[in-house]
Image (cartoon, rainbow, N blue to C red):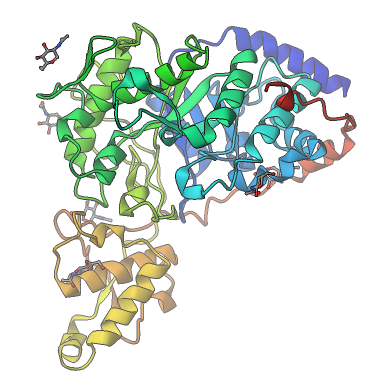
Amino acid sequence: MWGVVVFVMVLSVAAEFQSSAGLGVNWGEMASHKLPPETVIQMLKDNGITKVKLFDTDSSTLRALAGTGIEVMVAIPNVDLAAINDYQNARKWVTYNLTRYLYPGGVDIKYVAVGNEPFLAAYDGMNLNTTFPALCNIRKSLIDAGIGDIVKVTVPFNADVYGSPIENPVPSAGRFQPEIADLMTDISRYLYKHNSPFLVNIYPFLSLYYNREFPVDFAFFDGTENPVFDAKTKINYTNVLDANFDTLISALKRIGLGKMDVMIGEIGWPTDGDINANVLLAKRFYQGLFKQLAVDQGTPLRPNKYIETYLFGLIDENKKSIAPGNFERHWGIFTYDGQPKFQMDISGEGLNTTLIGAKEVKYLRNMWCVLNPKVKYQIENQGVNKLGDNIKYACQTSDCTALGYGSSCHGIDVEGNASYAFNMYFQVHNQAEKSCDFDGLAIVTFKNASREACKFIVQVDSLSSSVQPSIVHLLILSLIFLVIHPSLCDVFLYR
Ligand SMILES: *[C@@H]1O[C@H](CO)[C@@H](O)[C@H](O)[C@H]1NC(C)=O
Ligand SMILES: *[C@@H]1O[C@H](CO)[C@@H](O)[C@H](O)[C@H]1NC(C)=O
Ligand SMILES: *[C@@H]1O[C@H](CO)[C@@H](O)[C@H](O)[C@H]1NC(C)=O
Ligand SMILES: *[C@@H]1O[C@H](CO)[C@@H](O)[C@H](O)[C@H]1NC(C)=O
Ligand SMILES: *[C@@H]1O[C@H](CO)[C@@H](O)[C@H](O)[C@H]1NC(C)=O
Ligand SMILES: *[C@@H]1O[C@H](CO)[C@@H](O)[C@H](O)[C@H]1NC(C)=O
């Protein structure tokens, strides 16, 4: 126990010398074939990225982040919120998933994100009862563990928790959505009182995706013919980020929190999987965003201010749910294998530079699985459904999002479609011989099957580099005495 206290004190001194500036990225790991964390961390360093936001507390990732000086936000997934409504579970969570990484030379964990967009309209109120108590329990646990000053709590909210009324759609009329206004008020005040930021995810791409009438140039940063004029503040809004951010500022002001610190937890643009998801528009978006961030321009209601920002995301993730759309698997500023997608200058100086990609990536062999050209005759005469069924099967457990409308492989012929699907299945199954059959329709080839814009990938070899979990950590943990403490949450003292 004393050892832990001493570690913590050393760490708090070190934390004071950390600079707050710098760009962050969201490091999601919903991929079938992950790059080794060490490789990803080298990419971060090579590109001057100093902060990462994680979606959990994956131990191999956190162990690799130790001693790197990279600032880390860890997260509690929504599915764990209910359990953490029990204070004892919150204490355990902090011990097992947090304090074990806080030793001298350990991980610079600065925030715990409690839930991920827990009040997203699509979740239908599922997390409304559990988020605030979990937030409170985690904060209390941090304090009881002696790290309340080092590690802060926050909640990443989707921008759908606030808005302006339809009859007055301007930023100055911003308010929290009426159905959750009381809860949002309580949580925001709680965060503010405890020096935690309001964390919001803002997606100009989605404004465009969900509303095809949305003026395209308003999603970017290079001016618009039709600015949104806010009569109350006399401000002309020329991009959706400013307008959205200031809507939140107005909502906070309305509840007396006009000075609350706001951070952007996720922002970015996908490069495939939709008509507006492509390299050209992504490049345009990021160029404008970086330019604005570089000069600490802030927004009209928060001018000349550094806004801490985390890009979404780092690397494409082929296991993300595509319920919101096919673009979900293409948010990375790097491809699945850690290579830059386009010219990007994160310094915001508009230089024609490229990000530095992952080094020494290990790939599977140069092999592809394609439709056997010899069975073509068969397909045309009797096998159309057999082919269709096999394509469907291949796509179910792999990623065929590039085949959809508006995507990079849309418009290739039906044979190309089949080959693409078969190859994705083959690669996701580590090129196992059995995974290139499809009722005898498929065949392995050593010739690159890519077609112009439609890339047929060779997967990363993630088997040869998987990390074994350390038993030593668990042994040490079992020796740490857990302080039993009654719940002291002040959650319900607010109303
Ligand atoms: C640590 O985090 C994981 C992943 O979120 C969770 O499943 C596990 O229950 C946590 N451990 C404890 C002791 O709470
Ligand atoms: C949340 O609590 C309210 C009031 O106790 C209850 O009516 C509602 O069913 C609960 N919601 C969920 C998702 O548990
Ligand atoms: C806002 O923009 C409109 C259209 O460009 C322009 O007519 C108007 O003068 C602008 N108002 C202010 C206050 O800048
Ligand atoms: C930027 O650099 C790339 C490759 O380094 C080059 O192909 C491209 O023409 C350059 N673009 C401009 C605008 O200079
Ligand atoms: C290829 O597959 C996509 C996605 O399943 C589909 O939308 C498209 O129509 C197919 N194209 C052909 C030529 O079959
Ligand atoms: C296959 O070809 C594509 C497109 O020409 C290229 O981008 C890719 O690197 C090639 N793959 C391999 C493994 O050589």
